[in-house]
Structure formats: C-alpha cells, structure tokens
Amino acid sequence: MRKSFIYYYPFRWYPLFRSLTIKSVILPLPQNVKDYLLDDGTLVVSGREDPPTCSQPDSDDEAEEIQWSDDENTATNTAPEFPKFTTKVQEAINSLGGSVFPKLNWSAPRDAYWIAMNSSLKCKTLSDIFLLFKSSDFITRDFTQPFIHCTDDSPDPCMEYELVLRKWCELIPGAEFRCFVKENKLIGISQRDYTQYYDHISKQKEEICRGIQEFFKKHIQYKFSDEDFVFDIHRDSRGKVWLIDFNPFGEVTDSLLSTWEELISEKNLKGDFSEGDAQEQDSPAFRCTNSEVTVQPSPYLSYRLPKDFVDLSTGEDAHKLINFLKLKRNQQEDD
Image (cartoon, rainbow, N blue to C red; front, side):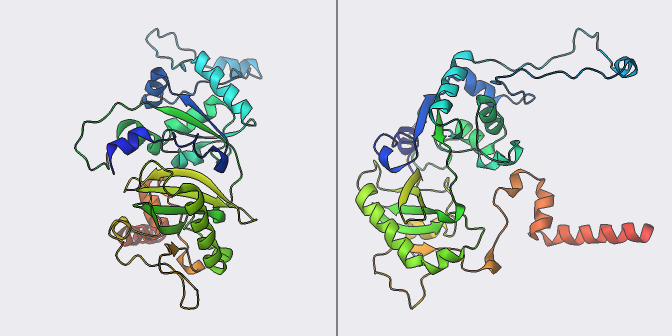
C-alpha cells in the first residue's frame, strides 16, 4: 500500500461515483478543530445548540450542603467554540435530512458507538460528532498514524483532513459486503457483518456473488484511480447494489473472513460454494458465516470494556477464566 493512495484518494472518489452511493457533504477540517479532537484533556463537548441547564436546590438544607470553591487556582474546563465551522456543519446536516453518519478521510468512529446516548453513529449536531470522534481510537489513528501500514519509503505527505457527512440511512447489516480488488480484478467478497449468521446469504450465495460481479464490471472496474483497493457495497431487498465506501488494499483495512496473506498471495483463496453451486472459474472467493455455530462476539466489544472482561466473556484467555473461578470459589468458602 502506497502513501500516495492514502493521501490522494480518501473520499475524493465521491464526485465520480455520486450516482451510485449515499448523498454526502465534505467539509475541510480546520486546524483548531483537529487540535481540539486530539487534546487529551477532560472530554468537554462543544458545538451544542442549547446551553446546559442548572437544577436549583429544592430546599434551604440542600443549598447549605453545596460546597462552593473559593480557590482561585481551581481550573474550569470550558469547551472551545468554533462558530463558523459549527454553522457550516449544521447547514450540511440540515441539507442531508437532519441526521448524518460522520467519518474522517478514511475511518468512521465505529469503535465509539457505545458512548453515544442512542448507542448509534447517528448524529444530529456537531456535539454528537465531537463526542464520537474524541472517543474513537480509529479517528485518533487517522490523525496520528495515517501511513503506518504503507510499504514505500517516500517522505510522509502533509495530510489535509476532511469531515465527511453522509445522509443517515438505515442499512441492514446482513446486506453489506466487502469486496477485494487486486490488479483491477475482483478476487474476494466477504460478508461484512461476519459475527452473525444470515440464512438468506447462505441460500443466495451464487445470486449475490453474480450481482456484485456485474456491478463491479459495469461501474467500478478501471474507473477507480488505483488497481488495488477494497470497496464496500449494500445490496437492497430488490437486489440493487449500492456503493458505500472505498478502502486501501492492505492491513489497515479489516480483511473479515479472509486473511491478508491469502488476499495478497491469492493462494488457497477459495470461496464457500459447495460442489452443487455453479461457480465460474474466474469468480471471486465468496465467504460468509455458514452456521450459527460460528457466530462471534462483536469486534468492537473490546473498545467499550476492559480487556480482561472481554477475554472472560469470549473465553479467549483460559488462565483468566480459571483464576476468576478460583476467586469465586474462595469467596463462597469465606461466606
């Protein structure tokens, strides 16, 4: 993966593929907004339309219990204001129907959905966006290590960051697929939400694969600026395919049900088609979760809980589980 790909083609594909994808607005990200998002201080969210209200004490006794500090050295955290940027963002949100899906040049704050009041990436104000961005490791990585997986030795270019606002659409997780392209050839397709089993995917593998191939050959192949890339699609109930996003062809992108070793070498890159399924020789390897037995926990679970808790709940660390059971037994004996 080259640095030029990361620099030149984050969301600049949108004008070319506008008719195939979700309506979006792209805004340059001011340097002071970037500095605020990277600030490690206390999380104070700015951009709110309504000021917070202060509750009044119900009685004199309650008022007497309130301790007011007279210390002049006491630091008060106040949210910085970005009036011009706030206005532009709100105008963009309104033009997109009042609710948006936010992302940076490459990443969306999918790892921070749990911190939002609605446990969703659906945003209606700049403060909603700031809360997600300041809580996201994915966004921080875009800011601080955008070229970490690049293989060329050229100097790091100076990134120009953009806030991408996409019209909010209720996409069905079981209808999303990730497609891997190498040398302008579609080599692999993976179920996007691989942690769940979807019966319709297993039953319609051949039809889904053929529809994505046709979409790729008609709209994507030889039209994207690079010959190695990844793109995500959504296939609606009528079988119509919609372009969702492009991603780099490399380890920075989740390979889902394949491995990057398989995708890069193309060795042992086989799909999940059974012997009875008709598949052309040049068809991409289509992979999906084939049974409920293989259902897995959400890959974003580790971002919302301490890692020890996650290891216990998923059974990934047997030693921690044994120690936990011993602790519980000792507590019971003490009682």
